[in-house]
Amino acid sequence: MKQTFKIKEKIQQLWIIFIPILITQLAMFSMSFFDIMMTGKYSADHLAGVAVGSSYWVPINTGLSGILLSITPIVAHLVGANKKDKVPFSVLQGVYAGIAMALLIIIIGFFTLNPLLNSMNLENTVHKVAKNYLISISFGIVPLFVYNVLRSFIDALGKTRVTMIVTLSSLPINVTLNYILIFGKLGFPKMGGIGAGIASAATYWIITFIAIWIIHRKKPFIDYKIFHRFPKISFSKWKEIFSLGVPIGLSIFIETSIFSAVTLFMSGFGTKVIAAHQAALNFSSFIYMIPLSISMALTILVGFESGAKRFKDARHYSYLGIGGGITIALITGTLLFIFRSDVAYLYSNNYDVVILTSKFLLFGVFFQLSDAILAPIQGALRGYKDVNVTFIMALISFWVIGLPLGYLLATHTELGPFGYWLGLIAGLATGAITLSFRLIYVQKKQMRIQKSELA
Image (cartoon, rainbow, N blue to C red; front, top):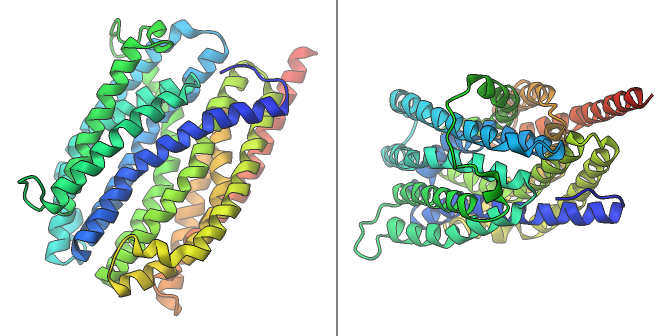
């Protein structure tokens, strides 16, 4: 990662960092994508079970582990300010914090899993698959959290291609294990959705060990000597990590858990609706990896420039990312509108499920435009280390506006389950508009500070 001076250079650097992140995110998400798609080919009941299980797993995967994404702006600022000697301590404290968080989640899950599932109106097979899917995949929580810290360190140095290679190398393993365990090949019993959980947990362990080996053996990471010594736990450093990371993680958790909450509400509409909703949500989330990757790239670049106090350059990166996100969303939204029926057939051969999935995907088209604005803005604000307002607006947009509106539309209009999706779209649009003003405010504030320092 280097300082840039022209807009063309900034576009090139943004592109160089963005593309590997996108491929990495798509590969990471593909684990869930193949879990759901391959389980759907096994049976609709198992697809519904994985859908319910995913409704609990996704907030943990993306939200709570998102707390550890604070390592990215922390390291980016240190590198930008040329304080590289402080990087190893921050990374290892992040690893310690990640392990502690993972163990806490496992303990909480041990006591709450049965009551949560028992409170839902689930068929016996769906209940069994959901429970065992979550138990299976929970064995991968510790390595997943550790990997997120290590990946944040690697990405903060601008070496996003490395995490891309690590994740891509593990994807064929995940698909192969899915095939063997879901459908009972090579002498293994047919496990359906439960096998998908086991396959994902094993894959998380694999990518974590690969990342540790690379950081310990390859340049430029070896120069930071991350694993050469292990300092004691520093709660003061944990305070910095969590003070920055908790708003990041909670804002992500709020966004992902709202979709999980909707999935739980969908249980009242029957197994086919649950399966169709989850299939459409899964593909919409797959496309969401594009604006999310732009967001992560902006966190790195804006953090690097902001750490070096080059606020004008940081602002240019912000607008380039938002503009690029909107352009790509127009393209992907159009393609999804045209081919939504074909996409639905990827998930199920059941005609009723396909028709319902296609209808849900029509609403998914409108997700793309709001996400294209919201996600890059969130990434830029994280690069500025401005995270508290993002969390507050996520809470208001989704839980105060989106979910209540969706519930009213679903229960008091003819929209039925589709009303929830319309409510979510309204929440996304609200967040995009309000955080746009916040980004402008933060940028103007930093420019005023810089002018006063020069004066």
